Length: 585
Image (cartoon, rainbow, N blue to C red):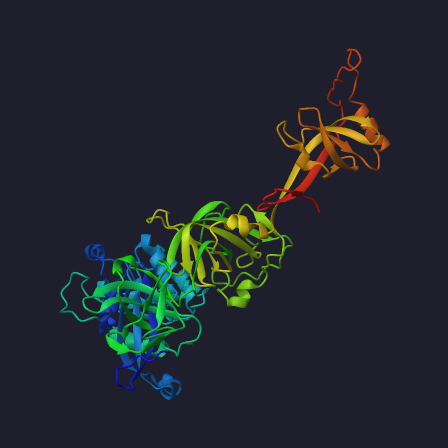
């Protein structure tokens, strides 16, 4: 952790990020307000529209500080930490703003799921739980609004809802997590502040018990998620956010990759306290000069040159089992990665040799937890062959999906860190529908920065589509040659198919030699010659016409049990091959 220090002071504060998520109107902002002693610039719904509607429209940040819990003393005192600061990330619960939650969930150490004790689990509560499973290892459930329960039935109702929540979480990574009942704002948001919140001291004690020393690393290139940007007259522009990776110091040069500009860090603060550096996990305000805050409300700041803007990407994918629809190739999904959500066309593909199943799942309903770099890259190589899939293939049972990937082609370029979490959603689904809109997830495997990636990178991707055509033998020319029909349309360029192998339903193998006439018929060479029974089969349906020499032979369909001799042509085509060659194994 970075030092949350006062200038000239040796006090060090351990920062612990707590994400407060839940359904709209579950009371998340009231809870954060009740817990907080210091509010950051982004806290408590700065958006006017949010204040009107009483719902959080953006990530709000606030904090409160406590003494180090006893279980952290031995680990933290030698590192110089004297107290513990909980930074509360109040994520929006309004259905249309789930993209903001995904951006916020990637920077939290502990997830707090706020549930309206009267209504229980709702659609967005479940979606928040899913995001938590993908992004966080620990969770705490808060049953809010207990003041709305009749006093004579309050305790039994709380116990009943607690049991229900434990049952819901039983098959997730949050099994046996604590469930705490509170009333963050008795009387509701419009009520006077005379009634004190209920259960908050007990909640703070549980939060202290759940706190741990997060693994922080100051090495690596700086990456900071900015959630708010504003100007201070006479000083400059302040960008507030959370350091996701690396560290930032006064006088460092940082880049705003979305705008392709670099700025020098003039000063920094953590919750109004001046500091000289901040590192991974820290919430910090960074002041730069000569920068218009209107250009960057949300986004990322990084070490110059360390982030890349992508036009397309490859991702190993896992379907979220609660998503009811099919995941179809060429369909468009909302793709959330880094702190951006963009539309992308998705194409699914899998291994050309079936991979062992069971690698893509646990029992959480979301599949595997996103892994490290080595795990992400395992199994994928540009030299390997893959098969195009019309849609994502589900396994025989939950958590048994075969290994598969997706090509994401973004409608507009997106700037994101390497190996970041990627979530595909259908955010255009009716916000009142009782259905999960989160469809699939993975981690960024390979990004394509070139605008002309279709010409430079995609041809390296060996994704094939199996093709097959069927026709029939029209007549025999000699023992080694037949004429085939119905394999191709009249307008087909038959030269593309010359040399391809075919098989006859009678067992012989042949090779396409070229076209015959102008109607799409082909001449097929049978190297081993036709079998006698094949010749008999083909001759029994023929009779000579009455015309003179050179007239075409008329055909009639084989009678009785006689069957036509079929021609089978099987080949594959690499879908990104610019020459569109046909290949046979």
